Image 1 (spheres, one colour):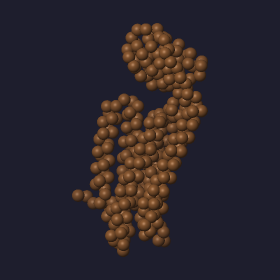
Image 2 (cartoon, rainbow, N blue to C red):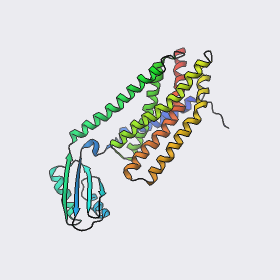
Image 3 (cartoon, rainbow, N blue to C red):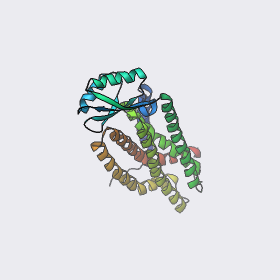
Image 4 (cartoon, helix red, strand yellow):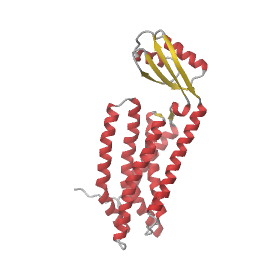
Length: 292
């Protein structure tokens, strides 16, 4: 079995992470995030044709309307629900005119959520992420409060947050590059990833704490390396079992669930990597810096 000294080669892993985060920031800076209707406001209307209609015909007509993308769900052979960005009254009339080109229909219902509600959702999503990160710092600092050698407990919390930011920035950069819409499901995926990633990180940190307790005079580098190799199998196996299910959802699921699955797949891969190769090795780097 190949044995890699993770702590000794930590600078290589720092460079890899630096490149990935740099590319993510580059995409976010140049291309930005494509916010979906959840954050920009939306319009939902239900239509019913007098005769059966084809979904692909409706999609083709809508694509030529110039009104932007739309999610079209078929409820029956005559009834459809469309969800798109916020539409003004004139745009609403234009949308109905476009749809009437595909057949004789009746609008059953229409509702529009303005951009102000979308801004509120963006703020709430940001606050949810910020409060989650703060709670994680407090929890880890409390859980590791008896650890003082060679770094204090709050450093464990800060390093965990650095790893978590690494784990959510890279999926955001991927979605920015692919121009996938950012919706409420994506925010849910990010919050899920925060929990998954911090769990992996705490497993390793907890093993470091236990080994420090058993070997109070051991070298910190060696204790961290030993702890990593004691937990790496569990981390990888847990991640693989989750990834198998997510890959199945990505391959066989619909468009909306595919985007959710992709966010989780990329985040879990990056999170597993960071918990093994970044978070724990940063403990060593900080300890060495404080010794200078």
